[in-house]
Length: 475
Image (cartoon, rainbow, N blue to C red):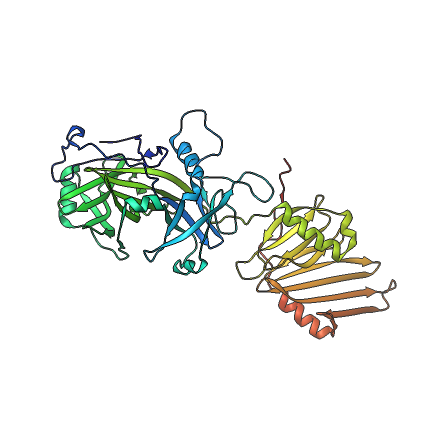
């Protein structure tokens, strides 16, 4: 049976969730169980566990999964998000990777970026980009030691839920292990299709095995199943993909023709049976939700499908620009009359830390800064002096009067200023003489040493010579 929408009492205020591809075969080898044969379900009104995205102890959120504005038409996901916001302080128990719960506390909502603009939803950002969501922190920060990696989805529950639900041990299977043969055979018979592969992702206390089975394509469709098995009791949820003779089967972008199975983050046994908190990760998206095995019916309820940012640009805000503006004005009071309004990120040396290039509205004036730690001014530009990037260095040169040219070369190491060479060449009007001055890191040096430094610093041009500058949205 395909279930497109279903109501589930998963909160004290009658939480609503959208059902995703739910199928409810029998609790035994008889797959003809009817609704009339199902015992009446006990109403469980405790709030279901939620999903917390962890970057570090200072950045952990239940990320919002739908819009802030009320939709015109009834929307179950929006109702659920609103109700979750109302009881956010009740989610105080975070399930750690070691199977223990840590106490956490709600610290407030985050809906705006530092410039006061609405943060987007539907996405999982990097730790340097703010997300819209419910913010939490550890009561005891030492508990964070149990979490080894940032960018991790964890389960958070209320005390009320844990009082009425027993947590079951979940053993993740990291190596390739196939589903039991009897399970695969039963599903082949049930769907009249031939399986091409199967995989177990975890084993759950109570004799449950969870994984996936993938079948041979039929026409332009291909079927995979998310499977929960316990002995002869086999439950499945259909996941239909697309088949192309040239490209092969596809469920997700870059899945290589193989269905990516979901993972159970937490399992609980309550008044109606099993509640499973599941995560389905794919290259382009992360899906969270619940699976329930209640009175022989196995269903899936999708909470959110987030877009995964891979090459996300680092944000830069007006308040950041204001900080750099103050540094420029302190360096040269001239900049009090010249405001920087444009910016772009650059990666000058060979690491993952960014530098920033800012310019005035007419791009006549500019500056480059390191942003690792406290901002550090590297060099400035004006109408006669423009910066050129090299791998690990910046060169700024131009005229300083009749017959006069000056050049600055700044090198970087670990995204901080390493060395600074300045040299000036002054040619007499009649070309009778040339004067040259060289200064390295504030000390006079000779021509040979300066030329050796320049040759080494400027040996490889940077790939970014004409970057596109961004402008702030002033709305």
